Length: 131
Image 1 (cartoon, rainbow, N blue to C red):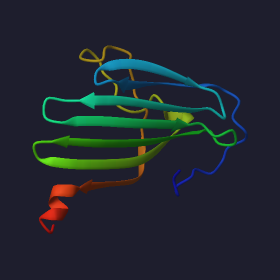
Image 2 (cartoon, rainbow, N blue to C red):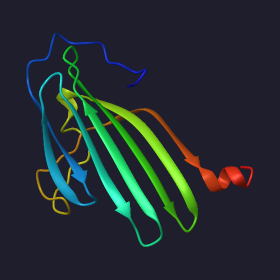
Image 3 (spheres, rainbow, N blue to C red):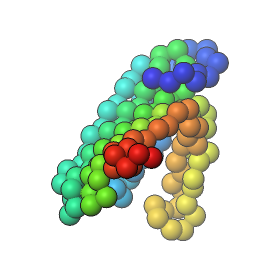
Image 4 (tube, rainbow, N blue to C red):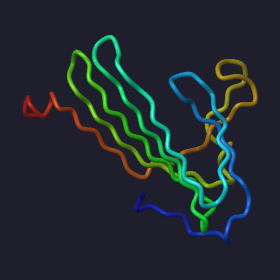
């Protein structure tokens, strides 16, 4: 999935648990065992076109790391835009990212400290305009 890999630790045996947002504002806590892959799809028609998102989380059997891949394809009044990113987070750092004290999503909720490995986007209207 990504060219960037952490130095493998001894074969992980513990489950990895972390929060994600799904369908915009819903909180979901994922639990993954070493060797698991989870794929999520969401989206559909919007007021101005469409928006589709794809997320993939991978927990290799031989690494204490979660790899994440995110893709979005959307069209609105400004045209079509596709984005793609790949990130990773060591299992030990799954609670080191953004944390809320009082506001949404609530006290005690911490998200993974994702480290970007690769990202790109394609703006179809900008390409037509020669950018």
